[in-house]
Amino acid sequence: MNRRRALAVVILLLAGCAHTVDKGRSAGKPAGNVAGNSGDNPVSNAVATFDPKQIGKTDIDRVADIHRREVFASVRVLAEKLYRRNPREWKKGGHASIEEALDRLLDPRTGWRSAETGGKRGTDAILLALAGDFEGDRVAVFIAGMGSMLNAAFEEKTEFFILDELDPQKLYNSARNLEIAAWKLASARDAGGALLLLSNETALASQPANLSFEREFGKMIGNLDILSDLIADKGHRTIARVAQSLATAVFLPVMALR
Image 1 (cartoon, rainbow, N blue to C red):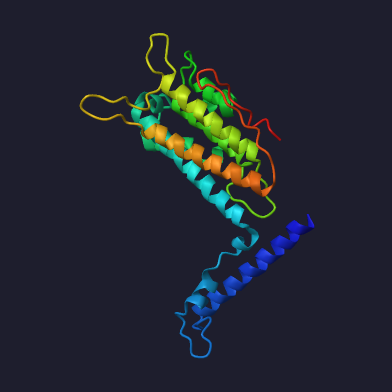
Image 2: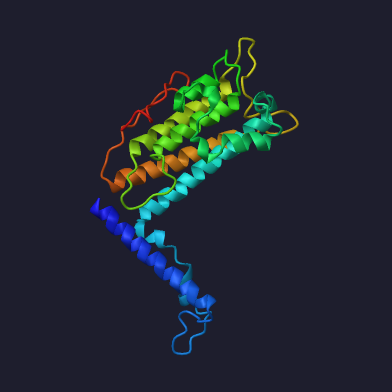
């Protein structure tokens, strides 16, 4: 607790310094104009634009920020791709457009909770979205399940600082779960043999295969695997690795891990 308070004090002091520099400039007092240096000195400009939050981050925190940002950018891309390939799904929610459906689905205030999941989250929601008898918006439930699982893997944080800790096992398990989710998405069919959700397109004589969904999943899996290895190496921890067939694989725990 004392460390947190000390860190907060340092951040507030730095924020105050940055504010003072900006205030001096607005009053016609160029900051850093020493011994004839102009106000365009890059050093003085760097002081004015310094983000005080960076003092509370380690290199691994900055790397985690980047990987998390990339992972959730891919979640948004997949949501839009799925809605465009399956327009009947966003219409089930009574939305006027794909954009309106995406805004509702990806609104950070919802915490990756959808009324259609019936309280299910994580991999349970993913399984619900691909159940043959489910009649709701499959895309919304699939993305909400994936998003809530990933959010749990990142300890429900959007940014990381010195005192924050990530569990490499959660990140590793999430990567394996995405492999299973991608396979189920591409293969889940109804009683009549039709795909429940359209995603990748197979190659035709006139055009090559569209594997954009597979590539997006691959980017997320790669980001999670790299970050899990970095976190494990930093904390001298061992990841329990598993090998299983996608056709018979079960989802690994993420939200249940503490």
